[in-house]
Image 1 (cartoon, rainbow, N blue to C red):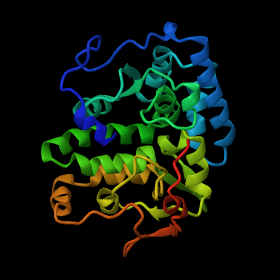
Image 2 (tube, one colour):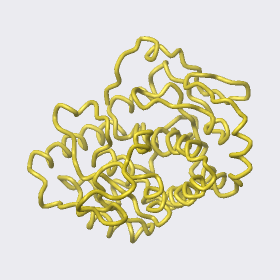
Image 3 (cartoon, helix red, strand yellow):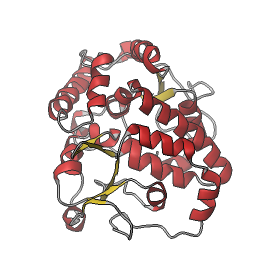
Length: 293
């Protein structure tokens, strides 16, 4: 989810269905495009063990995602539906928020069908099929995380009614895209934006620059985020079960009202009450270096 969605048309583009889905057209992928997927898959799957939450690797295995080439969404969905009731569908790119939330609420994950060019291997502005499928889909095979994603979609539709979509966008950003999780005494990756990025998979866990702070729902919803670089703060959940429970048990309407009068928190800030795993020096952001995946 990003601010770019605000400029999207209200109706789907030509060739797309009313729900913005399009055929994946798997047979149209070129050998070079399949080779790019394989190159990215090999690089990430080699570095993630010991860094990513074990459930992510379990998902790669049970969904047979190590099979060479860009996954066929139909085959992938057949396996995924049998596990958690989810399926993967293709869309032409970013979709409006109400469309996105409605798909999630119905256990449908939307994914772009294009894959980056060789010159984009280390940086890409718009999510491609590798980010969407490699980064997101493995954890949809985990029953608890799958339930969280559905609950998030239902909550997203409600946030639109209450005029609080920007609050819920921050929750998505700091959990689904860039979340960390405790694994015993260690921290692990679970966010898709990290798991699909070579550079951020190293930065998020190893670099002294970013803050790593215990997850707090109100704190997350008040915190701005960056879309143009590595994150200056990562939030750490204790478990998928705790994240799901807080999402289901919270009455968001009064929470949104309370947050209306609360000031935003800067991307790099440490505030009173934070549970600090690591206080970052922010050297990367201060240096102004561009991010690379």
